[in-house]
Image (cartoon, rainbow, N blue to C red; front, side, top):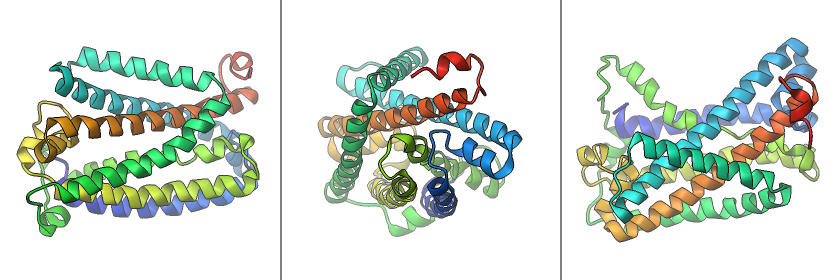
Length: 298
């Protein structure tokens, strides 16, 4: 509704390019200050304590918002899977319940220790890459027909009610802007990383680059596979990608691909929770949070 396929594709390309520039700057400073505090510590070294305080709080709120966004998105996909598997119709109440359970799961996993987090992160890389290849490969080979190149790269849709195409396109770019977040996690985990002055900045740049390429391939694969654009937007599952899977592959295979996506989202939320926990620890270590003496205990 907010720009359609054209904004999704070109917004991804443009936002990805700008994010790479930002990530390169962050990587350069991270190589000089590889600490759990990440951005706020860098701001303190470069601009003083006032900028550190502002940066730290903005970074912390952003991390908490990212966790909420990732886990809520995961809850929507779990609801879609439950709808296909057991016929349960997702309601706001059930979605919030699933969301709360996922938050608790990620809290428990990170409380279990850094070794488990490292194992999950290692598995996550291969799961994300393999999942993208599986989904794109399936959606490339299975459909009897595909959308045209003109539709994928040029179709603009406005179902928002706003009349300004520029404003609608800006809203559509939030898809990419939301997705390209959390790449500062390498900085927050640098105190637990070998040769952090090299590994942490490389992690930042690589995470953006891999996401940029894999995300473009995934978006293009999904859009080329759309069978009924209006039906996809109004799907009863509440999740348009689920409807694309159903239209192309049938309910059985669609459930399998949904599980692949759900596990990928769980990995992502766990990594973001780890980054936020290190940020809270470092920020409280410097006495910048309420009840800092409690939060900084390891």
